[in-house]
Image (cartoon, helix red, strand yellow):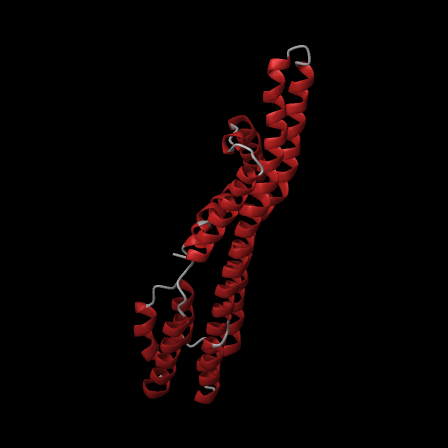
Length: 248
């Protein structure tokens, strides 16, 4: 669990609630189902309109990474790289098949398989680079779901404000109904701006950082596979392991 993300979200909500209370307002006045429906459902519809369903669902699944990010596997990866290098030099490239079969990472298994199959080092690196590019593109497009939500939410909040004011204008002769329309107008704006800046945009930025970390690790692994396939000196691979451990 990423407790910093949990604390950040709670702190943001607490700040708004405390500000409302200190100013003499009631927290209940910030709870307005109509305004929430306008902003959230409207934003959801706009994001769905611009995104393929597969990318939208992928972006939704990635939300869990904000609070439960993928574990930092650099230490384990460094140990694996050292084992691959030692095994390849001691017993030959075919000995890497045991690691290929044991790997749970599809990218690593694919790289080891290509080494075992004897694919030329330059071609291997090219194929792995294509794989990394496809992975990065797919994940960054999924992250754009949250960036798009951050862009649409404030505008839809303004739309909710306009709808609330229309409701006010329609009921000028009935003062008792004016409060509801004014509430929708102001609370919709709060929801739109608040969700965009306290939720959607931070999520997008955090997911982009996670994707960049994963891509950097895959690029390091691809470089190691190239070194092993081309028979480079062990010292080069040791330097890559050291770089992997001080990457962040």
